[in-house]
Image (cartoon, rainbow, N blue to C red; front, side):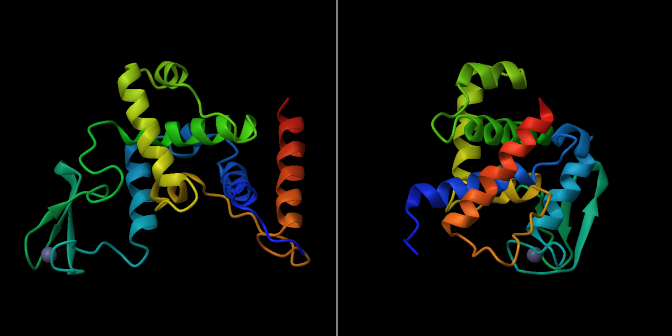
Length: 188
Ligand SMILES: [Zn+2]
């Protein structure tokens, strides 16, 4: 079996994400900020929130501020503190939508082009400069080798590779491409 190149591995990464997006769309699956905070919380801290300052695990949720507080050291933090979205002032819904748009666009162009700053700006209802910055942050996070905080949050469907197919092989890539094609035929 010939060795997979970087390009093929990247294809597998992005196609897997595309196929794991919610079928009803990100906005339908995560209808409000609370559902998005909840999702980021479980992706970031599957065992429950941990204080970034003292590693304490006794944490209180402050509803009015949408922040956590550590019972040991009183440190306050949000679900996005010290992540790709550190200190973001944009609603999480906008980030989630950007992830979906970027994945769908990039995959539909066979990993040739990212969505343009203008198209993303229009879609999100933000300025061009803001859209470029959002794109940069999201791509760095969800690209192969990134921390994939946002990707893991938004890509909710686990695709189970049939046991006969070796992971990260050409067969794996072919399987993903076929699934992608049958999906886009169904959609149109
Ligand atoms: Zn603490």
